[in-house]
Length: 340
Image (cartoon, rainbow, N blue to C red; front, top):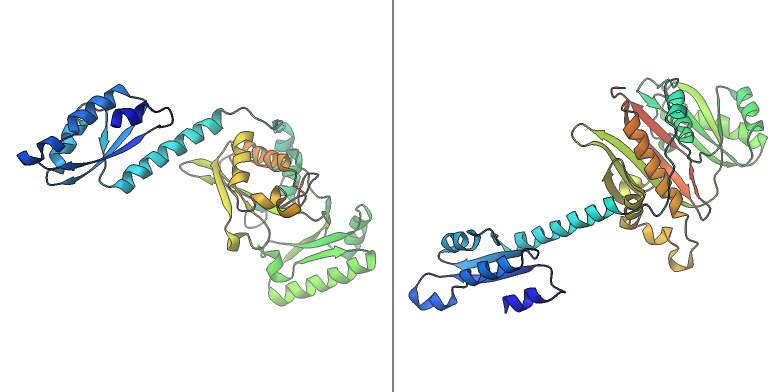
């Protein structure tokens, strides 16, 4: 029976269950020589075994003596081993798969010119500098300007197109939305002034000791799905990538896919498929599908950036707004602290 099963082209592996009794009356049930012999005929089809009975140790030694089969302490461990083999094969296939979406390499000289001049804040973060660096990588970043006062703000807004948004820039504030430090959908100059003043008032209420360096005024992006892209340099594994559902509830939703950098275009596509958000990105329930190649491009280029700039310890893009036309970086930060 075992040989007939292994002969089947639709079978890739087998788990054998057998008894381990040494009494003479059970001699006819001893299948160890048959398992080892048949396993030797099919070296490309792994056989995992699990046994019950009195002499499990003795039967295990007999099964494994030729190295053609392996005995596991439980059915769960045998099946999970096969699952890991499948996962390993899938990972190999992803790495060797040709890129279905071509992604140009980033221009290292352009990126270096930006990062070498960037000045991190007191905590080691780049905010405006992160947007500049990602733009230098060839990613689409929503147009923006920095302003240190109301006069500079109006001058900056003249160079942009309404509607606009405002974001506070402070070394003391990480989560701007929790401090009243964001204003959206500003449609004219008077609204801009009103929202600027109201935002500073709210920030002073939530963080009375915070030092405000500037505000960032930015063109509002069109509506779309929000994803986040993150990268962190691990001391053992090096730069690691994460893709997830974006927005202010990223940590609460906990929808993530992880890979080691550098990420290929094929791997980036698989990361998208692993998200619970994926059906929505692909146009579920009659929705308009998002432009997935733009997410792939962003993942690949961020992973390239992490490989060529070892001083980047962490990088976060949240959100990356994606619609049917492409993806736009709206907010990002880079933490410097590695060895350049």
